[in-house]
Amino acid sequence: MTTEPTHDLAHLGHHGLFTPDPEGTLHYFVDLLGMDVVAQDGEATYLRAYGDYETWSLKVIGSDQAGPAWVSWRATSPQALHRRIDWLEAHGHVGRWTPRDRGIGPSYQFTDPDGHVFRLYYDTQRYSAPEGQRPAIPTGFQRYAGRGANVRRLDHVNLLARDVPACRKFWEEGFGLRTYEIVRSADGGDESAAWMSSSIQGHELIYTREHTSANGRLHHFAYVVDSREEVLRAAEIFADARIRIEAGPSRHTAIQGFYLYTREPGGNRVEVAHGGYLVFAPDSEPYIWNPKEWKGKPGWGAPLPPEFHVYGTPDTVR
Image 1 (tube, rainbow, N blue to C red):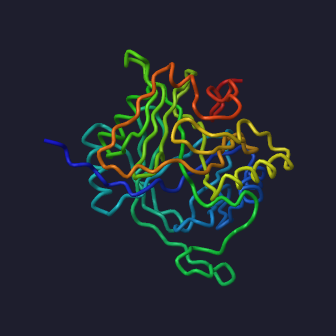
Image 2 (image 1 turned 90 degrees about the horizontal axis):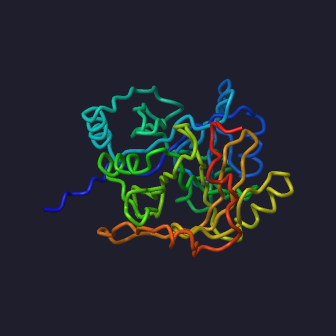
Image 3 (image 1 turned 45 degrees about the vertical axis):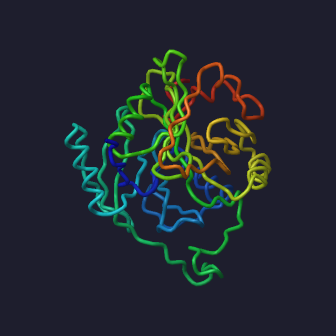
């Protein structure tokens, strides 16, 4: 008998990002990516992209080092939220409640098997655009930004993990995430990457192997734009702003998206992305890449630099 799928997570939610250079990081996200400042509170600044339906989606927090503060998921209902919390606590992953934060939450905070901090929430405040920011088409959330790279919304997050299969199984078994692609050795004993999602979107959460002794690190956050041309436009914007382009523009092999990677001034890696496939079949199985096939890189563009597979935040390798 087939187990009934779990559909308790609606989508990847808001996230927090630590930075040792708050001014430079805000310049990057606001002037270069095109996001808007919603509010400021001490060392924290709340931002949104023009396609976000929630009041804010990114909290930039001044700190002594870069890295992820948390990644969150919105549950499909209050009951779904409590079902997932019950599973966490029954399986030894007891967390804690964090208070409502500018219209979002309260949230239940916990860690994955590698030590990354996550939050689950349901209650949220929908964004109501002020006069002058309302879109002509009322089903939009705010008027077209048209500033900088003009990112629409958060697309996915890639986390570094010392035990990729443990993290993958945690989300599959506990939360019903679907895994769409895996990189695994020919004998099946070594797994180095997994692409996962709560929906038909090809990826929301990615784990790739951590090549250092650290844990709980961020590889990158990715923001989506509407076309490949806008990824190329972002490259021009970053080049003129003297932001080093680490990789791309090129086409990914996994999920088939178009990408551009830079590091914001605080040190966190950020991707501007477009595309990627959708999986409509409810019974699809993950595609398993073997080493030879993966190294062939059917995606095109310049090879990724060696540091791409090692660097993450916090930066533990200097």
